[in-house]
Image (cartoon, rainbow, N blue to C red; front, side):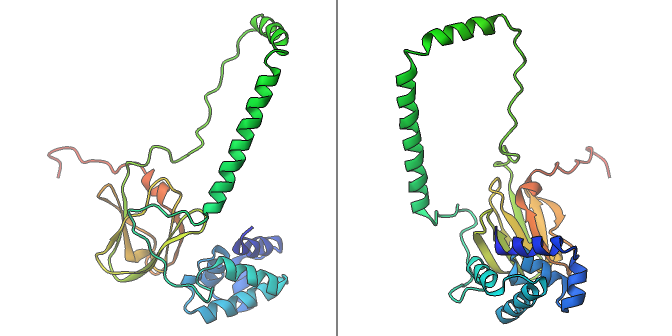
Length: 252
């Protein structure tokens, strides 16, 4: 479990709302939410973020140093060697753990070899039992087979084009589902960023009203409310939105 999730779970277990914690710790509500979602870029200054984190952990009565150490390891902003991370918006993220892919491939290969060995060893002995089973099944009515549920709720969205356009200079961060940061910087007015669709990416901003959302070139609306932060708006939900109605020809 990520450190930010541990903070939120501990707060909810003690029955505190964000507003109650803010009143007791004198930390602003949006900063507490930023700590729980690990969007520390919404907090002005790394030193303030660390101080707020220590105060929040102490307030919740959690094991301080262990959780803070985990939080700093998982948060690029709080690591001493962290810098702004940005990638080409038209590129896919490069694999950061090649050893993990190799290990997974080895496990799959071993499982396949074992499965084939079991199939070869049992093919001769299972034939009579299989025949009896087939005869028994032939006397039973066949039940309709339900269609499998789609494993990817956002399947078929790859043709959609989502764009985020800044109306004024403002900070934007784009994350992958595993916490990978693809962009984290100030976007200039008129600049457009195109996140990948179908990858469960999320958008984060200090001022939601500073950005416009476009779908296939058509304006959808602002990223969020003016002056309010945006925490984790899903790119795929934007792409799945129904198309805007088209006015009949000759109207207006």
